[in-house]
Amino acid sequence: MNDPQGSRATEPGVLELPASTALPQVGEIVEATSRDGQAVCLALLETGELAAFEPRCPHRGVPLCRGTLEGGLVICLDHFWRWHACSGEAAGGGHPALRTYRVERQGEGLRLLPP
Ligand code: FES
Image (tube, rainbow, N blue to C red; front, top):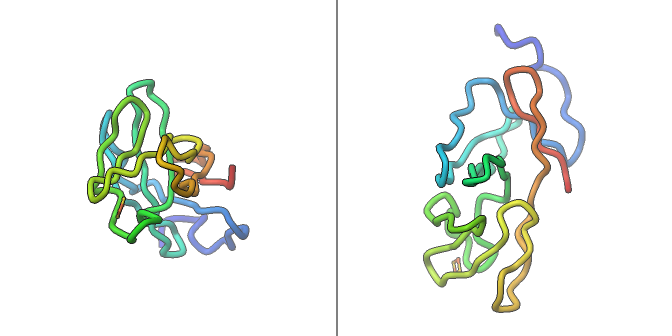
């Protein structure tokens, strides 16, 4: 393996994404996989901020990479629940928050930490 960090143990609650992770374009949500096999959504906001959040809608579990981004909000297209992409705070409707991560660069890859 050419990746010297691949065998390092990951701290609990932290996701490490390898350099090969395909990053989203502006306004796009993509699903990525951490070194230890966990799925996560990445979204690139119009502000240039990279947001990371849980990959499935807390309502009925549909993939949020099939949703859309509008003005910094993630919108699940099944029943239109909305959240602020970076904070995970629900936008109207009183539904539960989305689990999010703080994003840090780690070499060529990314490190996602609890908020
Ligand atoms: S499945 Fe996402 S809002 Fe219902």
